[in-house]
Length: 442
Image (tube, rainbow, N blue to C red):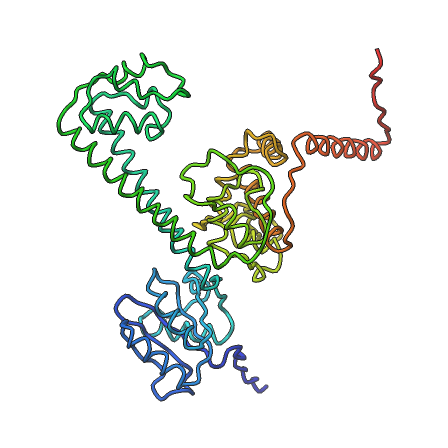
């Protein structure tokens, strides 16, 4: 019996190229039919990237796949996209699913082969205006994180001098704490004079604060405290510059004339130094801060990461899956092995989980939903479930343009009560019984 000749796999992208991105050089592979030398190495300078684009266009390449290696892929991506090529940013972990040989040259060839067969998925990258806002917003987050580290250094210097300011103040960088620390750096040592900076809203008395400010004023710790405070102030100025830049970037994006209802949320840490709520609402067409738990800072994180156009996601389920907020589907032989949500460093995911955490004590429907989940599961899982619900609300608001209206805790609890009654009636009917309400008359 004659053996049937094996057919080659059909190519989905016959004119695709693969790029192995590196720190000092980039290896490129194009289809063998496009060039006599299908594998070439290019440098990382701008003229090298332009020469790379010229060679790809001369070879008739229309689609390029490259791995998301660190930040080295960004210049390559931007140059090739500017030259009119379709660039697919590919997660390196996808390469592990299909076995292949490992070397610098064959990596780009294997990437080109997988791309031509349609075995890769492109990562989503928002448009250019969103990327610009995202870069400044991320820089602001970096500065705030550095500020926090210098606050810890100030706290360490105070403790080393046995200045127990953290025992009488909940936040040493609040109004009272900052005033006391700046007075110490300026040379004041009298605890009773320092205690006079106490704000009227501080719960502890001036005597308690003065007692906590009795320490050993060692010169080396005072020097460290002064330097930490100077670094904190310098970073605070950089944060203000980021706020001004974000405000300027959001101004041309505000194309919607929207009327804001309700008062702005108060008490959010590290607030933006401009009317971010209005600017973000004019950009998105909806006010995301109307959702319980989402502040202007959280809304900025969401919009700067994903933008306002979510048409890339087929529905809210795809959006939640991209955020890694949906259950996993590890199934073998019809048995669910694990439904744990996958780990991710997605900034929107982290922002929504932080927003969900703030709902635990609110008198809202989302707060009641959070507390109900906590009665039947641990808090981390409940937090993920509430973050999933917040993600769905964000998706619906951005895609439908509908405002969010909180139905309130009482209405939510009444709905849950009616659902419980209906479930009990169905259960009783299945067992051949009928439920009757008890009499409330005395």
